[in-house]
Image (tube, rainbow, N blue to C red; front, top):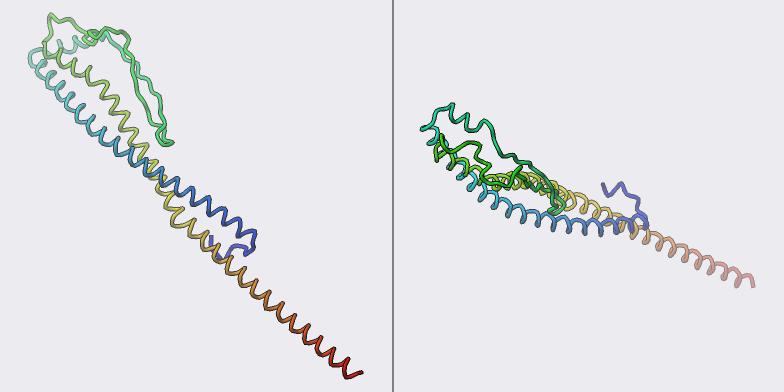
Length: 223
């Protein structure tokens, strides 16, 4: 808002001063929110890096076990081993609020509570390395879901940080300076009008005194 486009009245001055107080309060709250979001984001990034390292290591170990198992089994035997899975997983998603950002929370439930149901085959014709590979994959599932949750949370929080940063900058560099400039402009105009009014009153007073003096002189000369 350009200062020259405002109406230089006391009512407008009061309105702008109240608006400026609100804008400054909002600016402080948004800065505090941005700083806390950044703190939470950095903690989440560190957690994400640790989870990714752990998940990649577990998956790498599982792939190694599968490769060793496959070297001692035919491809048909491997396919048959995983043809009829016993276990099923139902994924559930909830959300939690972090500084006005709804981040996902993943959880899962297995169809049965028996941990051995992850093995969909008998042990007679399979390799122990195949069991180790399946065990590693089953063990990494909680961390894998946690990693997915963490990465999505990082994306959402990064977007919120950027949006909050833009709002802070808009208030700090555009809206608040414009309002301060407008307040200064109105104050100067009102002061100028007040001085003009005082000068006019003084001139009127002088004219009245001069007229009164001339009237008195005429009255005295007439007597």
